[in-house]
Image (tube, rainbow, N blue to C red; front, top):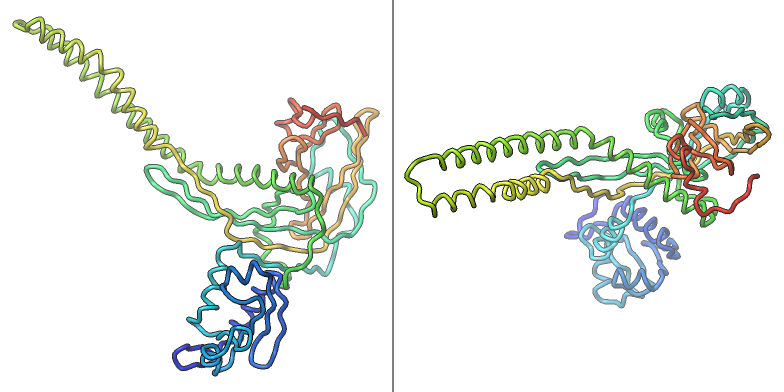
Amino acid sequence: MSSDPQNGQPASVEIEEFILRFFEQHDAAVERVPGGLEVLMPESLSARLGTAEHIRVGSGPDDQAASETGSPGEAPYPLSFGSELLEKVTHAACTGLPRVTCRLEFQYRKSQGFDALVRGSFHFSGGVARVEQWAKVTSHYFFLTFRYVAQSDEQKEGLICLPFHLETGACVPAMIEPLPLTNRTFVPDSKLPSWSEERLRRLIASIRKEAGSALMREISLFEESMNRRFRRDVTHLEEYYAGLGREMKSSLERSGLSDQLVRERQEKIALIPGEMARKKDDLQKKYSIRLKVVPCALMIVSMPAVQVLCRVSIGKKQKSIPLFYNPVTKGMDPAVCDGCNASTNHVAFCDRFHLLCPVCAVDCPACHGSQRKLP
């Protein structure tokens, strides 16, 4: 059913559900009543919407007239296209990060062969890995979509989607392609496990690390094109000023030039390197790339998975590492470096047994200022 504020037709079910979800997600108490909704909202939200804290939201044909004659607490706010409340709610909803939650279901969950899978998925530098035990768990992932704009002499923009494992911070881009083929059920926002401050810090660091790397890969051709144009224009600039310098120097060899004219031309020749340097700086600014990255969508995914406890032995030292089997990719999620929070399948360890990627294995960043002892 469509809604028309001109003739007072009632709002559609979709609009009422949208309003209901909006208030519930903003910590308001909502109750369905005949003809609409009764809402008790926090003071901050009522101030944002310009309403009383306790209001009725109506979806009947007489709501517009009732709202004009009664007080906000008594008469319903009309719920139709073009109504002031709907416009404010829509604006408030669009200023936040759009979020959706879904649950994945699988008829079969892997229960054997984890030793071979770990050996095939990871390379442990100088160590031997053995699966000690495994357990069925519920894992949570979120797919964070960014919009980027790269501005230079031209402009490039696009979207980047990155899936992250909430428990470890591992980036799992292999989930993107097979996800639409899974059995998915979209559900209201579910309660996520509580996070420690350390886990939240590592998750944010992983997002920054992986998003930065993905962005550099995405704009690599654009960056190469701008660098190529910069080198081309610099070459032309150098050729121009080199020719100008030769021409001005040769003009000094002409007979009949006064001493003052010779001095003036010599001064102009001396200014050529500085002028060329300024032109190069202008070209550098012209072809430099300015980036803007904004998160624009979030999908939270809950699904059954398997947590695998793996014991890594290096000489007489041992350490247990939790790894996760992902039913979407049918493989193991990457591990996360303790040094830079990058996702990696090539694992090394320092003397203090920090899990490291190949880059950090050269000089462990986690050891700087760390006083932790070996497990």
